[in-house]
Amino acid sequence: MSTKTSKSSSNGDRSRPLVIVNPKSAAGSTKGKWAEIASDLRTHFGPFNVAFTKHHGDGIALAKRGIENGRRFIIACGGDGTINEVANGILETGEDAEMGILPSGTGGDFRRTVEMPQTMREAARALRTGQTKKIDVGRVTFQNFENETVSRYFLNVSSFGLAASIIERVKGDTSLSWLPIDKLRGKASFALSTLQEVIGPSVSRVRVKIDDGEEKTLDTVNFCVANARFFGGGMKIAPGASLTDGKFDVVNIGDISTMRILLNAHTLYRGTHLDLTEVHSKKAARVEARPFDDNTEIHLEADGELPGKLPAVYEIVPAALSLRVPVPK
Image: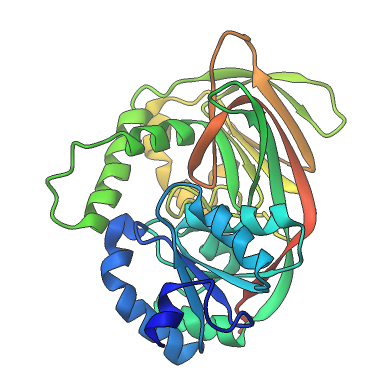
């Protein structure tokens, strides 16, 4: 791949796929490994152009610009946050461009649902030989931190409660900066933050309306609106979720003690937590959620990012995105 091709999305053959890379993904290791990643991608996938994100939100802008310049296949190289941004950029244009995933993050939850290989070489090969699938996406309308009503698409999971608190703690954690390896530091920070939040978990009281049902009051430790199956670095929060059924899997973990969480943590990874008496799930196409007390601020996360707070309205958008996925074995 020439220098010109590898450094600019605006130059080169616009019929080539555009790879949008977050060099800070995988706790910063993607930047140092890019030459190796690019070599695997070129060898096992073929020619491409590339653009690097520099700031939060760049993935959205770069995907939009790519489509405006005639790109019809855009690949997100990074973690779930990068995938989310590229998907939002594509979806906001309204064009039927195809999206691909080149996993390079510490979590990689969405890639688990679509069964994209984790190694760069195998992922590149899957992008070349894969098939195009129309998948559902979620759209959440909520309050941002400037108290404006905004909307955002998500591919994986949006939630409020424990998961949002853990992500908030991770993003503000500098206590493990002494660790020499970026990827190790990222995983350790997530594990430590999870333990800190699980000890004495906060229970939120919310009002929830599902589809055309009546609004109900719920106590929740964690409330998930899932389009895909995994979140939190491999937890199978919604084992029955499908990307093509036109429904969310709504999972509520109710008032549960610290000891019960610790004793049953393994069930989240196996997907057997739905058997617990404190856990309830339901299929839905629309979910409305707001704090029981209007003066209470409850933050939400979407695909691992923290864009705002309740009240929120979740809506499924069926068959909204064309995604390149591996051919089933």
